Length: 282
Image 1: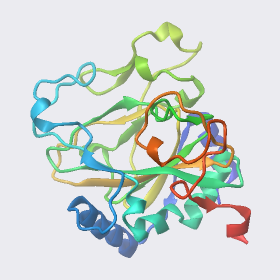
Image 2: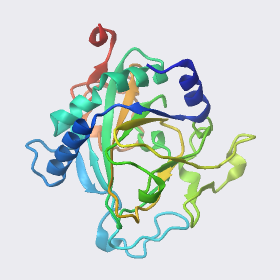
Image 3: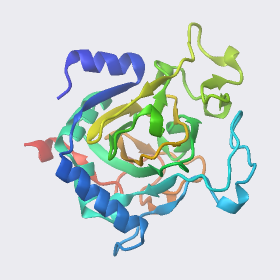
Image 4: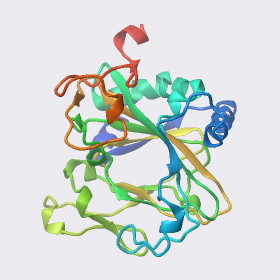
């Protein structure tokens, strides 16, 4: 359970480092499961299993965002809803410590999985993940009260492309279409006059130890640069919905075909399972 100081830190910054939630054995088990899914060996398949940076042959000299040029061998392996392909990853998504702490941060008594996401940056060729906010990329749910639990399966440090966060940015609203980065991967706003008075765009590294959890709000600005090191950078992020999250479609999303409720209804169903509720914690 998070204490009052931790809750206040999250409220102020929009992100928080939690404790170590996975043992060495649990980390190794998830790594093995990840290998099986990446290699297509799982009986059930995830929703997505691809290179987040797109078709490699089409990437040469393609500018993904200001200040950054991609080369053909750069890769970020993205797997969406690995929990559907792996009982071990579903068990992880229902981790009691993580779920209890996310429920505190969301101020809810019910949590459902919105979806999960693996991002693996391989050694040397691991590509960047552009500066973004999560919630604007999820145009079928409201409101923007989701919290993600990001657990490192390798030490995530500056050298191998850890995430960076902009403190306080979760309070500034939706600025997704205005986010950019310079040649040093530091973020900036293309139209800073749209930011609230006193907003300071200053990124800080969010280094997470193997087996440790980091939490961030769905509107917090974050991104991660290239992995040019000899180290792998594997992580599992589970995006959790508080119980009041509604299905409100305004555009396409990879999870749209899995929705079985009507617009305006609570987002629920077998593909959005409850992992925390009063009945589960008794």
